[in-house]
Length: 257
Image (tube, rainbow, N blue to C red; front, side):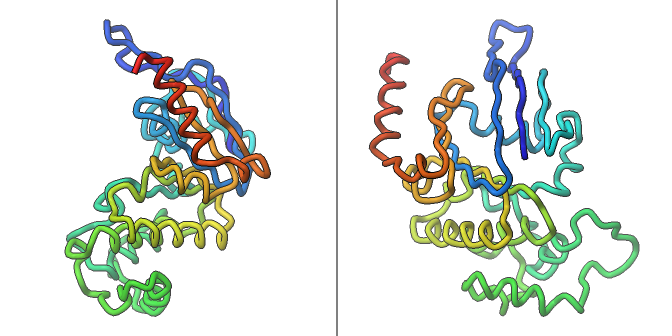
């Protein structure tokens, strides 16, 4: 289980622009849950992901996995059991390296490299078979540099690469936002397939309300560092897009918009 306990996070501390985003925030995420997180800009969605991954520091509070506090653990350490896919397809791959080289890097995450060839020829067939499942023809372009691929192809690769080694948590930071509608649908279907097959505990931030409703078994809506909607299981399955939009409008009116 992933637990966030008594989280406090300030920005611009000690200045006239000081802002408290999280004030005694608490959340538990059960093993195997697929949590879709929605909310307006500035509601705390990405900060939540960054605190879990260790990209930013806590001011106070605890991030626990199975009771062990990882709140002060460095980001590169957490990467051993957390996979992350970003909004920008360029952030999950190395553009000046070939598809095969990118796959090899992901395959060896956390291992000692030493002075030996970066690519393991014995693994090439495994990489081809893995890429073939994407249905994008990338298995026939192993020596092509990733920088010439489309955004959708790179994002599909980033998703595959983030889950190549054994991980417990998959963090998706608006990973379809930069894609065209058709490619976004493909990436979401691939995401759902990988999450189910590997039984990954997943947290997906998205602005696409349909994806939030259709995918996953828990939906959380953030506003000013608080969860104003938190529905799981059977309750989540009854949520309609109109209900979320109604809450958005209610918040907008409260904020004077």
